[in-house]
Length: 519
Image 1 (cartoon, rainbow, N blue to C red):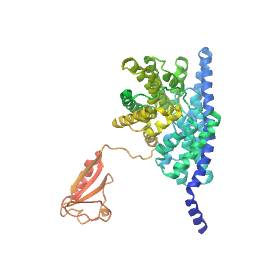
Image 2 (tube, rainbow, N blue to C red):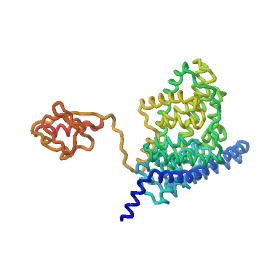
Image 3 (cartoon, rainbow, N blue to C red):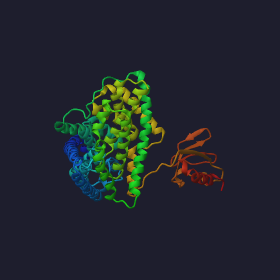
């Protein structure tokens, strides 16, 4: 017993160093696995283009391709049925595990997500690699934890390390990986987790970059920083992005609800819709298939006319909703960046034609819109700014990027739009029958006076069975405001200040009036 106690005390003293070492190990494992996933997806994209090239020239091959898509949809459906945790992005699943509400089986999730993501991208679905990369990285962290037989508390640190490593390896964005995992996954910025997560992220990024190159993901050139006299355009763009981001979140949840609430559709049959639609679009509009990297380059080039930008924006938006809502394994991260770029391209093109904007700023506004749209949807402004900076290498845009992110954030918040991953997690937990805390309107303060002879007079706070739907926040006695504690004795004349949800006000009012009134 004394040996075990001594070991625990020694481990606690060296916990930062131990966690940093484990973060390095997670970075190596997650970096290798996500690198393989990224390479496989590169071949998936090239394979899809090769097949579609023949399918557009040969009706026979086109028919064969539709049959292949049908088979792939069946396979992906079986994978989702085998392990339901691989459905969708994967980020809500990791967040749910960090909250202790979900428990993923890493050895089932890793191969199923890997294969499901590959097949979805090979088929041309408008999904991204970032969500699956984060989930795969987190499961690599869990695998390390289980192998080393770590406790639940330490396992959550390693899950965070793996998530960070996954994003870093997927996008050559180590700082964004750190910020996203802390801001969105761990929701904590302690020194211990920061150092270990940085170690994992940098390690995974280095491994990935050795094979994929150290150049940034996007290579378009931005000439100069937007001048102050054009900042009003940035404010307008930020408001537009905030509103469109809120609309995206609402539509995403609505489309997902249509799929999930339809009793005639199961894990497989609901996948037929996006897979077969991808086959049709591959023949008539192949540019909106896949993640859409090339669309960002085209929008930044400033060569597309406004009607084409708006058409591509609408088509990509609808196709992305249909693909993600079906539950196919894949993320929304990259597609929403594409949508942001198209919004920025459309606004700047319109502003050049009708509002006097200098045409040289089109690429600037494409970049700004990507950061602003990400912020409005995910509600992680620091991550959004750093992510776009690392993916483009454009540090000169930091001031204008911060401005558009702040405006988009405030606009989305003002229209009461929930962050997308929180909404997706809440929906996931509800479908699995797991209790979630729902918002019930505004918080309302009510005041009640204890009358002489009431049941509460001369009673301790902890002796009363207060309603679960309210909280006693203060006791005002004469001119003094007391913080209520368990042994605080209530007296006649005390004013009780009670906090409750708006929908619970009538119930709380009736109870408090009854208990405070004279017997």
